[in-house]
Every structure is written in C-alpha cells, then in structure tokens.
Image (cartoon, one colour):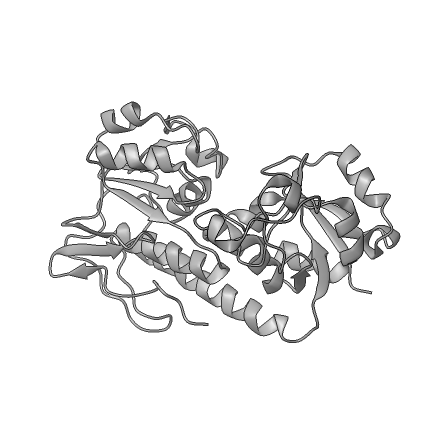
Length: 331
C-alpha cells in the first residue's frame, strides 16, 4: 500500500511545508505553538504525539484521551464551531476535517485569515499518513520506518512528549497497518453490516473510512456497492433516482437503506457502534429479529465507534479489538 502523504522532510530550509487534503500549501518557519483542533480523532492523535502544551482549543466532542483534554478550552462543536472564540485564541493553525466540520465554518475560518489545515481520510492508510503529517506539523522529521531521523532545527518546542516517542508513535502506526494488510489476506472476509443511524436507517458505502476499516479486520461491507440515491424516496426504493448529472457535488457515500435490504444482503455480523448514533438495546433487538445469519448466530454486537471511525492514532489502537470481534463471528 502506498501512502500519499507519509514520511518525508518536514523542513525545507527553515520551513515546515505541508499540503492539506484541499490541495492547499501551508508553511511555518517553526512548529506551531498554538493549535486549535476541531476534529475529535485529530485531537486524540495530536495528544498522543505530545502536543498537550500547544493545543489551546478543542470541540466539546474532543473527549479523549480524557486525562489530557481536561483544561483545553472549548470552542463549540464540530458542526457549530465558535469562529470568533477560535480567532481570539490566535492559533498558528486550526486542524479541521472536510467531512466532520461544516463547510460554512471552514469558510469563515478562512475568511478570518486563519490557517486551516483540512484533512479528508477515506482509507485507513490515509489516516496513518495524516498522523505522520501531524507529526511533521509538530516538528518531528522522520524517514521511512527503519531509517535514521534527524531532529528539526531548534527542536520541537512546547511538546510534552520527546520527539523520539512521537516518531515511534507514527512508525508503530505504519507497522500496525502493514501487519493488518498482511493478515487479512490469510482468511476470507465475512459479510458485515454497520449502520450509522437508526431513524432513518443509514449505513456506509465502500468509499469510506469505516468500510476500509472493516476490510482491514477481515470483514466485507455488505453495502459497499450501494450509493445514496436522491431524492429520499429513491433511496428507499419508492421512486426513480435522479440522473448522475443532477446529483453532482452531493455526497453519495451514506445511503439510507431498508430492513428488507439488510435481509437481502444477509450479513454474518452486525456491528452497532456507539457513535454517531448511540445504538440501544432496543435497536439491537430489531436487528436480532431479522432473518439474517448474524441474528441466527448471535452476532449482532455493539461496539466502540471510535475503533471504527476515529482515523489516525485511535483507529490503529482499535484494530486488534475489531479483529477479535470479527474473528469470533466466523462460522
């Protein structure tokens, strides 16, 4: 697997130069000393990389690691960021995500003259590469795993974790991903259904981080080929869908599906994450009542949504937990 934005020199001369997932080029003369993160998974990764002393703002959904986020100022939510408060914090960079954060908030941050580093990982490999990019942002230069790494000019001031530990965090992520890639070739995948919302019932297309995470732990997303259709009636099979030219620019990766479709796709395991919708016992009972292999074999299982959805450091920590759940559901 090739990584699009992995290890590489963080400094060109005396500058840190990074290209984000909007294709925008950013540069800093020294590692940022004031960072605001609007993405829970990025907040987690930054803290794991040792950025506690430079992280000055987070959203109310940035709750982990719990022992580290305490005391970091709240700046609204992921969809309703307090742009004025963020500007008042005078950050050197705002870390955002194209999907997690609202387009309006990102545009307002841009208009306020703030430097906004936007990510959009759709694969686990993208998340690992973004973790490496965040390490570079913090001043941790590195080479491909196994090669020696030079420290940046002036060091990585303000970091609460030694540079070697941060570099090892990223190297370990690459190793974990490579091991998972190798392991998934050993056994055929089992069929999996992961809803992300109950009313309306929604799931994920194959072109998503969640679907790739499933694939990496030995499961096949049963709705990987099912795009979201417009209008709503078409998504539910009650009307013809709009032609492609009329849905250009819309996100088609999160289809609304029916229980009949779930039955027809015959999942062997149903994973019910606790976010973005916190699936309940009552929700689980609905899926356990369906005529599907997962229900017959007792494999309708609630799981930690962070393991499935928080790209970067957190997802790599969740690989073994998800693999254990999937392997236990094998016939």
